[in-house]
View (tube, helix red, strand yellow):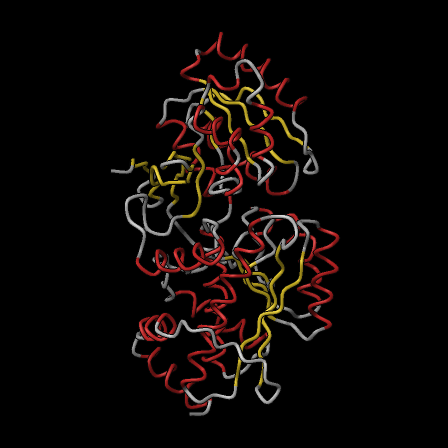
Length: 423
């Protein structure tokens, strides 16, 4: 069967409202590895900017996106198509300058479609102009900074921006009885955007923002910061009461190192700590004995865009998560799983257009996303090209046998603006 016939099949199914169902059956029914790089095939290149040499997110993203490519190619093979998707990865090293070089390298290799990463808003912000100027198209699964919510550009995001996350965090702190809080945050567009949005929402809801403390993103030793924070917590406890005071940490993987230094302070372990989507489900934190013990001590609770609820993970999301964890030994988060969706959505766009030209793919992408719901979350986009709406799931580290693992604890329902604990 030629790709034009496949396209007609998918378009007819879409006109009947069945495209989503058909693609869900096809893709997860074809999960054998089938990425064929034979030059006789027409290759459609999918670029991935990932932190391969710095964070677990790199290996998780690579594994998940390769599964998506393999699944899509398995379908193409069964359909008799001469087309093949191919994943091309470039290492960002979690650095903006390196990310610029990486996207330039991908462009030179002929890549025009970018899926998944980069894994931070800082890196994405560094390459936005390049992507737009060179007619590339990005479907990102990680970036949430509100400052990057721009209409009519070539960057789309499969996650909600932090204007929505801040509301969920504020609601949870009030639900948990925290009336006064100190915020520490990584000094980049992600940390600044989230801390500012949270300050507005939390104060509007009646909370007291005691202080907001940024730290340089290159920090690896947090003794000075935690010493300063400890002094402020001692004062805050005497003024507001220990049970009413909390600390919010808006950071990434470096939160593990921050917790190690925080554990040495006298009073930082006596109040509750809260996180964000940047430090939820960090494998290193759970496996590090010191940071995990501190997270347990302070009831550290972080959140991420929800696939299902705290009580229920949709079947396809659970299956994909297990598949990735078995392959990597790491627990994937929603961003990792969303990177799978990014590849699949590009695949659906290709089937709908029979073309890999950026403008054609871009023209159908919002419509494809509006009916796409493979992992249990609708990928409908807003006017800025970001995920329109989503619930948030809160996570905590728990002890399971001789290990520490992340587990769900509560759900924030965006439509009703309320928190529900896991049953």
